[in-house]
Length: 308
Image 1 (cartoon, one colour):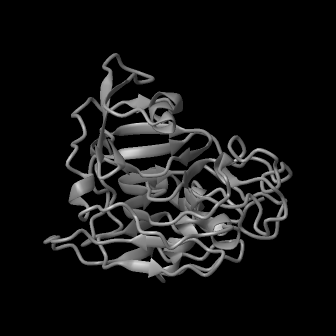
Image 2 (cartoon, rainbow, N blue to C red; image 1 turned 180 degrees about the vertical axis):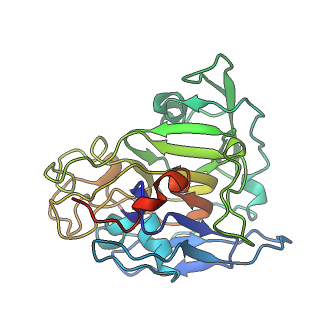
């Protein structure tokens, strides 16, 4: 849930091309991997780091441990409520190159409504997909190709709105325009006009609303729910939560990225996140993701501030 806040204690999470980081399945947990591209000759240093190290006003302590990756990407739903995982092997993919041969189209930097870009992914449309911007008159192409059974969507630079919890289908790769992180200077913001940014358009606004135990997670939470064999690479995400809900005593979502599982942190209901089947995801890979930096310059004075 930290990753969904507009002004979090971890405004930036850099997930670099690190050696394989495997969090082994602890039944009923899912298996999450951060994989390194084969033959990568990049000079960027391997690093998983949460920045900056500021203390939160509500008793949350900062951390630069690699476990911060799990908290930010999976949230409590993924950690405490995944029902089952499997040990089956993923489709054969030769490193990252197999997922990035499809280049994003060079388009004007524009904003796209959620329905325009998410609809084709939800139903599995693949090919040259025309998406119309909210503003501007130039339609751009969301390109999709299939390699070794993986549908790879190459997003042009732009702002892609998200206003619900989206379930990403199995064997799908979401690839942005470019890496938003500078590993020699992790706090440096990228040139946003060269980036693929997913921007939440609503967030938590009331302490008393039923978020954790709501009967419909799709329209209550905001973010991505990743199915098995899903890859997310070279994107930024900006949440807009300014408070945490008061209907539970633990983190229960929604995080920017979650894997499939129960909606509640104790699996006490039959509601699952993202409208999923609740079965734990396997072989989920995330690389080069930047969280909550888009509004950070505007909001940095609020980090650690008391909430009335």
